[in-house]
Amino acid sequence: MFRILLVTLLLASGTFAKPGVSVTVYNQDLALVRDVRDMAFPKGTAPLLFRDVAARIDASSVHFKSSGITLLEQNYDYDLVSPDKLLEKYVDASIEVIGENGDVVEGTLLTATGQTIVIQSDDGALRSLLTKSIVEVRFPKLPEGLITRPTLRWLVNSPSAAHQEAEVSYLTSGLSWNADYVAVIDESNKADLSAWVTLNNTSGASYKNAKLKLIAGEVHRAQPPSPKYNDFMRAEAMAMDGGSQFSEKSFFEYHLYTLERATDVLNNQTKQVSLFPDAEVQTKRIYEYDYSRNNDKVSVSLEFLNSKDNDLGIPLPAGRVRVFQRDTDGSQEFIGEDNLDHTPRDEKVRVTIGNAFDIAVERIQKDYRQISSTVYEQDIEVKLRNRKTEPVTVVVVDHSWGDWQITKSSLPVRKVSAYQLEFDVVAEPDKEVVLTYTIRNR
Image 1 (spheres, rainbow, N blue to C red):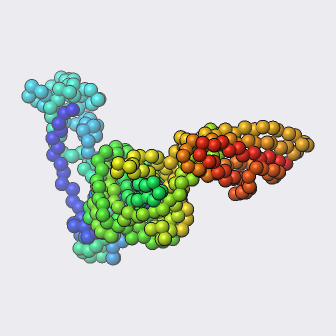
Image 2 (image 1 turned 180 degrees about the vertical axis):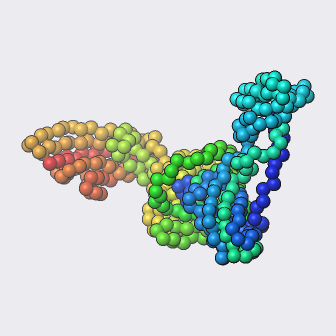
Image 3 (image 1 turned 90 degrees about the horizontal axis):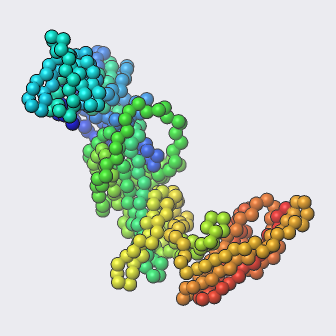
């Protein structure tokens, strides 16, 4: 790589200090930025620059408001300065190149590829230079059209010269958030549950001392046009910011979480903020066998009620739940994780952990009978062997479509829906239990 010396043009701008910026982030790679700044407006119709907007802004969503000021025209300039852009703009123009040995080559740039550049001197001689041997390239000025920061270029009209606040809001991609939960359970299935908001910013802008809001829910959006900007690489750095809570309230058909203090949301940063204080939640272990989903394994889940009596009772935004269990020596081990959907208060949450090691299961179709051209029967047998030291109850799930009925079964059946039935099978330690049932379909 070679070093570039820039002689930058000073662009006039009407921006001063920022009275305030707020960012509302959605789950769907979307954010609403509201930026209030003190600005100087000249009298009459004049150009004005609004810098430091997100590089991934949706320019068609910009809303401008300032008393008495009319926005006549807007352009979004996103052609940012880079070594390749400068060389591209200076084709057929004069530059100065300094090599490793200190040689200075001046002339007209004819072409620039990834490996070489070609310069024609005033006497007509051509020089082909390898970019790896170039120490510095000097350009006389910043070429027209290139900018150092993403900028909104406006044409505004003001009845008089004024210094006043202007509010600019816009949508941008590159900002998203999700919740991350950590549950640590003990032998009694009581869990210490903590929650973090994980916020990713690759929007191409930083928002310092910002008021942060989060929207939980699925906002419908029209199909956007193809973007005209380059994507940003996601940074691996993570900023931890614990201790503060969000206030929560219903907002339209969604839930709005507001951080009760200002925070910095920096570009190319993953930020975590505590969502709520640790809760002590009583959970229940669920064993389930569903042949259509897991044909030879019994799955294990934790279930709990999102209620005030269970130390929760708040809307839980979607996110990933990681579950750990305390060992007898006081340490804790990771035992599984699952995704949590948006869950209202007073609803059950079920987190699938994995498969039971000590419960073996077999499902066999013992017989199939065609009763008529439209009616047939199946005899099903499910064998469960419990190798644990304590009894377990396994929920055996089956699915059937059309007009069906259980004509006989060894255990009571529970019809969950038009397509699902369940049996509660109690398996004693070191015993095998057999469930049999007959399904008639028509």
